[in-house]
Length: 315
Image (cartoon, rainbow, N blue to C red):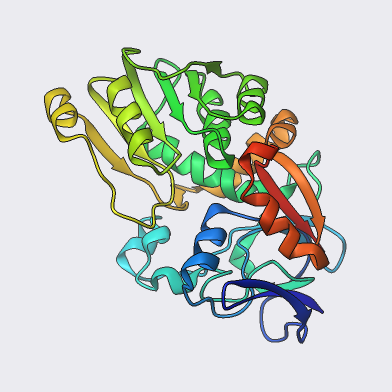
């Protein structure tokens, strides 16, 4: 089968053996390129094999499914409370990092990873469940509800996913975004577009850009005793404007991946949002490439000025 590998900072597509062993084989129909995939490629962080963790495909009988791309131990103190995103297995439990991921024609996953898709969502779109679940988890950790005013800083795929997840609660949501495609996506999802949010007296701000300027913008926009949610994946030092954070007594919430609250997984809540709102896919998916053109797809994923938001590989 065809599969992607990272080799010395390059994206290489070649033949690999089809997966075998215990588990569920999924025929991949869509795998999104995440900002963390770009960071891994650039940093040389060791990926065990095939990258890609935003995955959807079909079971042997043709059933479309998404993948929750983690394989936690299931028995540590964190897994037992539903917080399996911080399982003691760490990053090596992640498909696309410690295990072969979805930038291939097939993937073998544990049965727990299967996420049923709503009737209206097909396997070429279902990969959006993963970034939506990241946002759902952040919204849940922040305790956002319909009574609150929420600002999202950053209009990339996680920022727009955050808009979708926050508006699903009934909250009033505003968005700070830089590029025209991001602004258009935010409007489509129901966000008010603002330039900075400064003085906006927001209850919660979701920081989705991973930059010092974005964090400063976020802190200026939050009301005293409000919440700053760090939703972007950060590969560097996180710098907070100390005087503003202290003077306002802000709560800082760090959010990573997705877990479970009671019997409801964040990925299942994300699948519901995707099924309920067709405009989510329209707002997020900007480009589709065949798997054989993975190097071109990665180049496009870096080009925000060209309108790239979510670039997807389709085996």
